[in-house]
Image 1 (cartoon, rainbow, N blue to C red):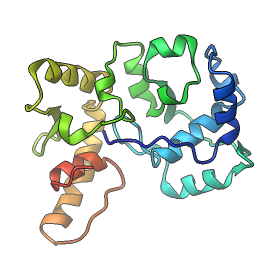
Image 2: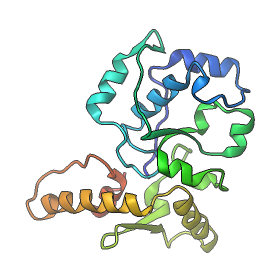
Image 3: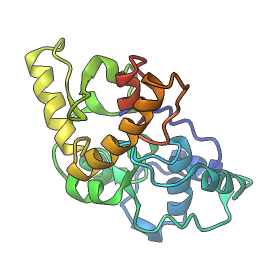
Image 4: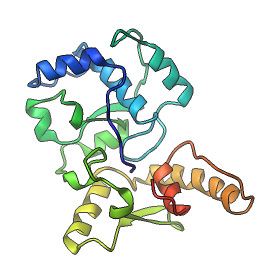
Length: 213
């Protein structure tokens, strides 16, 4: 799970509205800025799930999304269907500030449903100041499984372990896709000496190639 820079680039109308009216109950897709927020998040996240880095939208579609903003307002339907869900990292924030930008991520639908309202810890929030996956995680190249970094305190390791579960980072389906993607990429990287850029799961690939992202 990589560090995310969540600077709003396109959805100025939403940004201005949210800053002017920070306290809001959640009204789901009925909110006039729902599609704007979802689309902006997908652009910020390069079309990947914020937690698992599973690809939700291809890069060509992201370019179409960018062109769909006119004067800070989305003018097209992002059409994400069931793949991407609007996820509230902290359920407590959702109760009073449901449209707070800092609490929102685009997440693979089944992962969002599994997370639900489980207890969270800000240590593993991917846009927090100082977040660095290399300091929090290690990656097993045989099992394609994330573990807590053993250089952390025992208390922090337990927090990281629990958050790996809550955020679905080692979800079995995700691990299946991650292994398939990375095994192919590593063969090209190690045996053919090719410069490789993966289409998804960049943090795991960075660990495997010792270039933490």
